[in-house]
Image 1 (cartoon, protein in one colour):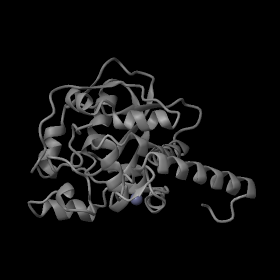
Image 2 (cartoon, rainbow, N blue to C red):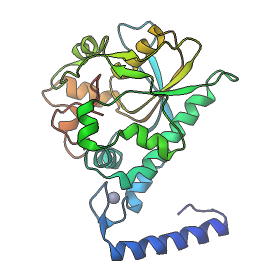
Image 3 (tube, helix red, strand yellow):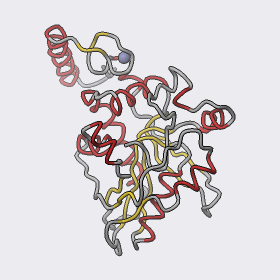
Image 4 (tube, rainbow, N blue to C red):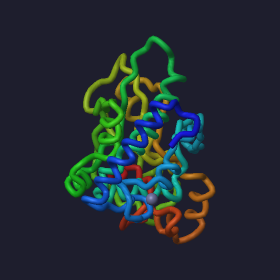
Length: 264
Ligand SMILES: [Zn+2]
């Protein structure tokens, strides 16, 4: 409930709350973020998913300039939990607040793009295995819920290598040449969009693939960014961000948050 919202909007929200509560009684669901018996995403977790747009940079030693990324959220706590449930727990019913946040980051990035030039969205392709296991491509689904669509111009150039245990330098080496454009991109301009930013190696590889096919870049946007302090924490220990327990929350076997060829 937004304080100060116009009366009509408040009334509508109350009616919607009542309708959803009715549904919850008929078919109880648990919150994708915290597990409370509530709605797909409870009020408290929804609060954590309210977009807080920021720009973050990721210095990559092999690039002249750091990557600048528009992010809607920090990848931690309820954000990480809901995103994990959405990506790997089949909780597509939690898509709405995630889509809203991603849309905010995309809008912020587009606001800084050169006006008058049409911009298409470029996403990182899921591996065939991830698509088969999930039945959907998470980023594409969130874009669709936002009324947006990926141009689908990149392909995996080779099989994904499991990134578990690889440090930043090893990920970078592993990322090189992983993606390829399916066709020439001369005269086309792209906004790179992904769900989670960690080291930035995935976006850097996407940028390389777009540019080497003749395309140009308008910027990049992600749903959530992993704070650098957490990446350093994981680099200094055998742990990975995923393994750092409840706060990181991103479940999965490999322990890798941002493989160059992400799991999906
Ligand atoms: Zn919750």
